[in-house]
Length: 185
Image (tube, rainbow, N blue to C red; front, side):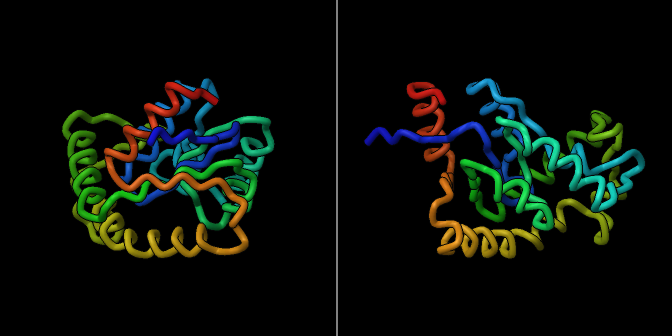
């Protein structure tokens, strides 16, 4: 069966840490010619300083007040501005061990190649192995909680009219891309 996806012009890509959200959102942006915004790049300041809740919220509001956008990530304290304003949520529901593996490999590559992240922040071996700030530990510990939160959110009557596209594996992702190619937004 060839499924057609209705995606609209206001799209949020969510999922676990290491789930492939940014890669997916960038590719989708290229397919449908809608600007992509990575929320982590708006949140993090130089030297791994966090934006204040007020300034971060203002940045998200500015983006999601526009007529079209794709954002990846879903900071729960601002989901009224992301999911609440979205026409479509694409939930990349990858498995825990796949996500953690991706985070580990991605971080090691960034450390070795010295590829900076947002605002010229660099991942370091110390940040990778330090339990308090390790993205790998965070990915492992937060996966179950995020899955439960998204399951509850998207099965709730409150969100019954929200267009949610759940992609659980590479086969489902390939079906999505084939449909987008045949049926662009």
